[in-house]
Amino acid sequence: MHDKFLFDGPEDAPVTILLAHGAGAPMDSASMEATAKALAAAGFRVARFEFGYMASRRTSGVRKPPPRAEKLNPEYIAAVSELGATGPLIIGGKSMGGRVASMIADDLHSTGKVAGLVCLGYPFHPPGKPDQLRTKHLAGLMTPALICQGTRDEFGTREEVQDYSLSHKIELLWLEDGDHDLKPRKSVSGFTPADHLKTLATAVTEWTGRLTL
Image 1: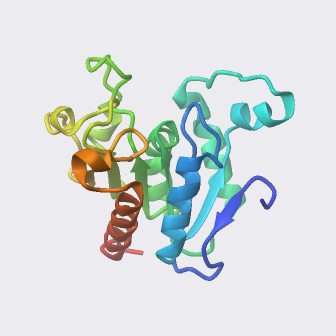
Image 2: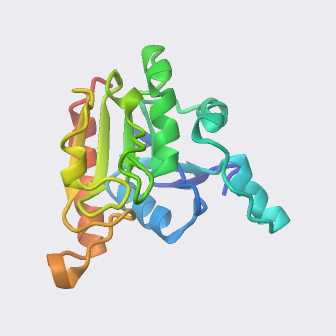
């Protein structure tokens, strides 16, 4: 840990990826840890940070609920500034963290501060509430984006998402039988979590290769 960030990958990597956590688990959760390691192994510099409500749990021991996602926008913008990446920066995160990043992406992209957006298990809607969509801002998104989603994610399955109005700037990587943590059931799909993480890292590498950095 360095100040508020947790780093993986080479310090001189050509591209840095800044990731925020989901609503209920910290930046060093098993899912975040495994994803960061996979991206680092692919040659990215990965930085993780926590929003204030999550960081306070470590010191107080009190499990505060997260605020509304948009209330966290200033904290993510501050993290980008504090990180001070010198090369191309991709922002994103797990679930809610990716959602927050998606809400600030266009402002940062238009001023050249970020090159793209990566969302890991985007929360298109709350589980069991497919009519409560969180996609309005995604229809006009101008930042190049890659959303990595499990086909059976209860926050947005492949069947549901195919009918959404999403910006042409958004690419989707579907991971077969993956849940909200992108984990498949090997007995059903034949894939392991490690398989999907490798596929994800390869896809992010290929996607960043197509960006104007």
